[in-house]
Image (cartoon, rainbow, N blue to C red; front, side, top):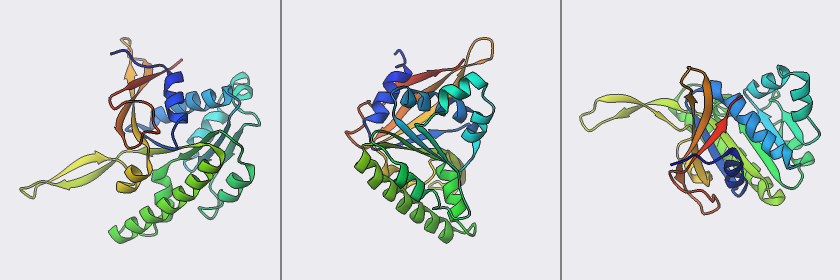
Length: 226
């Protein structure tokens, strides 16, 4: 089965309200998001990038002058965390325009900022608080016909089997909250060329929860790398 191009991936994402884009390797995130952001900016849509991890901001700072001028314009708004985790909200609401993307990068860091102690009770509370924030963004997205992309790095979790043996498996951050909120969950992995160089990022559809996402379970897209 041939992989669908980036343009189709962007179209299927933009038809949705909330997409969870999950990856196992954080190294692939900057180039992946640069490609998706460029697609949106190329259509003159607004991109509001909530950069908790600061990795995308770092990417912009290291672009060549020509690439920097191409991607950084009045349609791209980079929002970085302040002393309070919700500091970005007034800026998102005040500057929002119709169509485009709201990107939260990443759900992992947001929950870490909301968690005061590494206890199960506090982690559950952080998960609940992050769900409230995502719900508020969801209302904004509906008002302005925007799509929210929730980025998250898979996390290893202990899983008990029937014989009480504990194994570690990678799972999606946010658990049921992520699944409940998302129209679809997409998994991104890097694929290498024959000479050992990064050739592309393959984005596969893991699960679809809503008809808003126009792709099908099992569909695969590609983001070609320079």
